[in-house]
Length: 594
Image 1 (cartoon, rainbow, N blue to C red):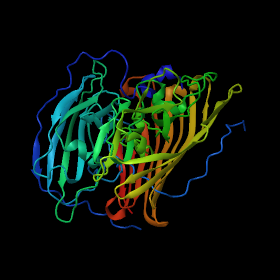
Image 2: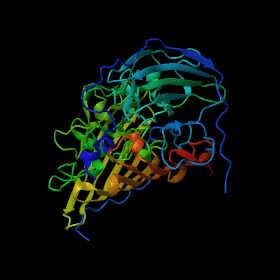
Image 3: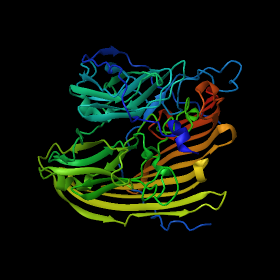
Image 4: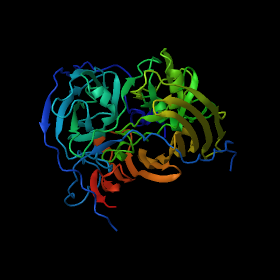
């Protein structure tokens, strides 16, 4: 496809560049409203039911199962179950469609006393942040809660791009999200997220900062109206307080001093390729020699890295998020967004092997970078938090980093030029391995922690001169093994993308796309399996519309299906399987089974 002809559809996703609208700022408030209520009944478990050369890189073999900290709990995007559309779906998109929803499982809540706190309420018209204040509730426990759930309710109407947003308390980012694109008649949506792990931050009054950068003018009329609340569930009766980090420190600068009695240390990084440039769809960039509209000298391979005092401490494969204007076709995403589009889950690193050198009381540098981004190229955001557990019986915990081994990073892209009338082809393969280990002499004995992680990426990108046909098939794997004493967990993540966009006769633009987000986790203790969990989210879509014409002349059609499957203790009843299908913005299937 010719990107200059449809650039407003493929690239306008988040934080649009250019002059800001002169409209007024988001309206902030410094008041903090608290409501005490009786908790609802817990969510019931669902009833059971029935030929060119390619890059040369050999993926490392999977590491044996050991131990890792559980990944950050994902945000949940919720909406009421839709009623069947009378008369079936329309022949094409009109001026209204179903409110956005995803099939993800709801956040499980305990049946205990609850308190609701208003965190933010704002209308975003430009890039002016909301600033307010937060005070913890007094009636649901003094900082010891069974669960804390964040909920964002939003509404927007008219014409607007999707926008990237973030929310922080005391500098600690607790939510990164993006918005759906509205219908002319308007939409509402909501996002839920388990934020219990930020108990240390939530236990004290904090300043609140929130921004959903937006542009409102005569063309883009959608004002983004949001309300964010926190619901605190008391620890009472047989429901204990949740186990959480003792300290949460925002990594607002690379220089940081950690408590000297740290015995466990994690870092979470909200890494997103965004900002209006080619890094929004970094997975489709090509080396400089190839004739394509988005260039990166080393091709599409990306890797999110964290370093301690200049030494590599963690690696991860970034998730290939497709925002709700992605792949040149917003009609794919109006009702069912792709995986994580409204839930930018952080990359999690176990830095416990580095705790001993960090416990010396001095300032150290902890830095995040994204490998593969062209020098001087902007477009990635990597806000980070440190989560620390402390040994209450020791003022200083000592130890040592005992092992640090890594493979040479591999990254190769091979471009095969197109024959007349045929397609260009770019084959990319890359990967990296890192193993670190260390011990700490704690009040409960010497504890050794080792972390082994291997990331790997392969992709085949094909396109024609002029890019009227553009195809990508890609897979990312991220396998992590962490041992801590006698307990071990292995997490194997796989992300997939398989799509094609074609600009045909009459400027009819068609996109066919499938996405996958899968993770398997197995925990062993003393060599015996004690817990297992699986996440398997998928999306498929097929949408066509007429490009380069006003909205009411696009004659758009689309069929999408999103499915979320989860198994394990993290979901009520141990099982969740929901499928949502839409046709022309109408929900035609909403099936729950397990």
